[in-house]
Image (tube, rainbow, N blue to C red; front, side, top):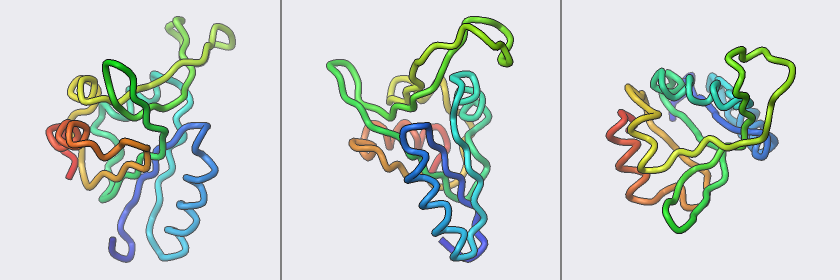
Length: 136
């Protein structure tokens, strides 16, 4: 990283304190930080569908997960079956997962270098999927 590079930090409620600590350190070194706290599933989908943050660097602060079928990055968010993203009722806890299988359909035209802090977030399969979506 160089002085005045743009860094985007993307996190959820479970990692917000650690992500904010990194934000403060980076800003103290003169970097410009764009902070994305994912709350709604549709918000997360929209951010990545637009190619993710348009920064030189993107840091994904999430937990990793592994089950019988997949390994990936998991963001804790809320969903709502209502069409209105401003609905007052009907919200339920859910997840937004980035896996080698979901990345091609969720992330396109990405930009810059990607760093993941998640356990298991550096697997070859995840890296290849992010590279194919445009990240460095």
